[in-house]
Length: 288
Image (cartoon, rainbow, N blue to C red; front, side, top):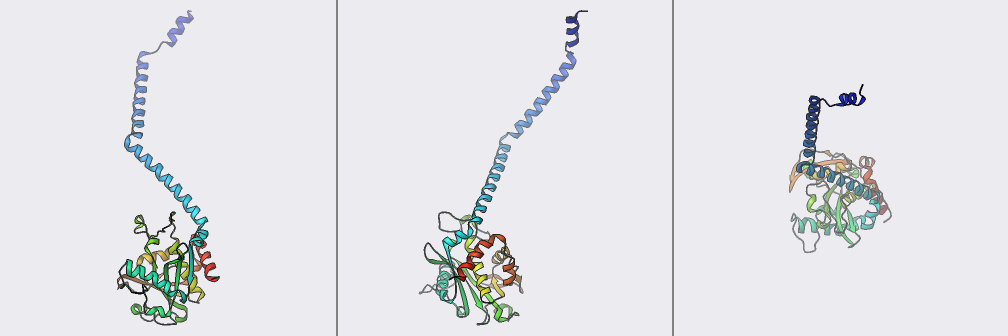
């Protein structure tokens, strides 16, 4: 026996099998090459890049939102003062004049730069004052049903709830510099601030609404009527107000809906993210 010869004969490649293996390997390489090319062609690279950017933006948004919530009460108190009583009627009327007369053109411009109507005589104004400028920048009012007629009664007739426990919410206004960015059109809470750092959280709108609810509670008002746009009804739903529509929509300068909310129910169901501003509003109005 020749070990070398036997070894060579044992290990000598089978030409036919080798060609089959070579063809199979070549096919696998070609297939893998095509897959790799498909992954890294221009379209897929762009797609992967977009997905990565979306993930980055999502993470950044979560971080910003978390930081905002953790510091929301401090931010609100550092920027805004909340006031609610008849002494601030002129301050509210100035905001209304800027928004309804000068910006929107819905009412006539007044020489005294105050926008008022017959319902102000039996209303409580709620005003948000910007600390940096010491100027009122947002307002809303409660028309008390036990002090006089409600505007909503023109459309739904006499209210069914006890007048001593009822009021109407109207004349919500935020001046333009604090209201909206160009890229926030159509959002539920479009809002901006003139400060270098603009918060995504709708801090002004939420602050005004919560100050309104606190003022209603302090005046033993349980039922709030609204004659408003559907977009503001959506805003109330975000605050878990559960507005109930009364009758059909009506035409009053634009299409509006009549709705009713319960003050105690809204306070009990306030979402967790609104609690920092709610606590700040309560503190300010109770210690003014």
